[in-house]
Length: 490
Length: 95
Image (tube, chains in turn green, cyan):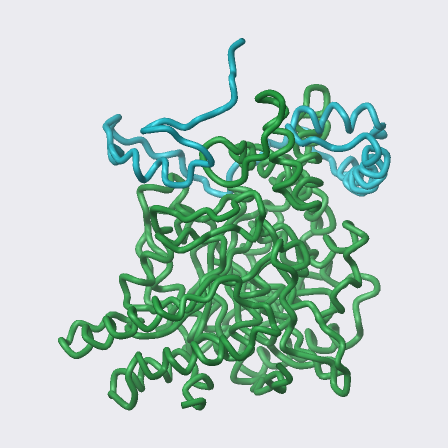
């Protein structure tokens, strides 16, 4: 039943509820789609037997009248989430064949609500990258190609496997994480919807850590409503993560379709950067016009420290990473490469186990935290981070949400930026500010460029105000009526 | 503040990553490129600004100091690269 993979999550849940098809049927359709799409390299581990088992359990629960909100819906899980009994590697050789004996809180919440796991999704190693090229399993290939072209494009990163799998109809939705743009940039590159919620909305417990003060989980899906349904299940207070916020999770889907009339939308002038393709500027203008038509008031705002967000991020994130990744010492789990003594064992293990970009970031982190440089770099970056958060506070005194482009370009070719770290980092220029300030940010597809590749718009909201983003996102989605999908070549 | 080969060697040692001698010069070039780009932060006036260590305005929660989980050595050891009985086997630490 190939048509089952074309359904939105919402339509699939409705079909399951009306018994139009079973979870086993829709799960099998997705298992087959996953198997047929290995050319995309989106999955690093397929769990078809587990998926069918979970689907049968879901069907039985539904038959007993005990269906959860996601009962029987097959999803993909980014390989950063620990899954009990199922290999979890963060796509790094250093985790080797690590098989967690526990389940991350976010995935446990999804299983509690009845979701079915199809397998683990490819990603940039330790979520460090914007093109998926740092994965030890090789890059994911974007299901989208330029019109008339057959060059392999990046799906973005780090959640490239999640975005590609959702765009290619391999799963109804996927988990992802976002430390500097890793949900929103891949969503923009693949014509999908992604939301990074407020820092603290989703528990980080059981998610392999990159930069703890920035990391947040969120969903990637094909519609705003689907993203809302998934986030409602994923979020929630968790005493096992001390930064998890003790707040109620609203029914986010109830915000989709609400009127946005009278909302004030800020357009930050600093997001007009040199060298941005005219199509992205035009799409941004179009987005502004759509929201005006929907009754929003457009207000120009200033976020004066925007250009300093990326350099501040590239101190804060590597500093936290160098500390977090100190745990990979080859003693308790993962790879061990024996040396002549303990120190040499550590050094050889980490040299072989970590990829080049991960090592680069650990070295930068160790450098900016080392004696003599701590004040000049790390402390300075934390102060700039405060300035960036204050900019947002000021803006949200005047507006209810901000509208910006998601990324400065459409999907680029694999290999195009892999030799220039700074050029790669610039991908996150519009997304990283939100992580530093801890705010929610959503990307949704709004149009295509001249070669037919999808482009995304980003909405930024006040802390814990994802609901407003879902309302505005719903209005933009309706106006944009983005119906593009990648033509199947795999 | 340019990073030279000696600094890369020192930082790699601090980070416990074996970087071969022949790789140090190119690493120094890469890291200098990144650090030079980061230096633009010096343009920002941060006089009197409180460093931001968390995106949340709340203080960390406290809980009773009691055992919440544990007592399952098999789970703890299940991914050990090397073990004997209920112990991790590690290289000799004290001579």
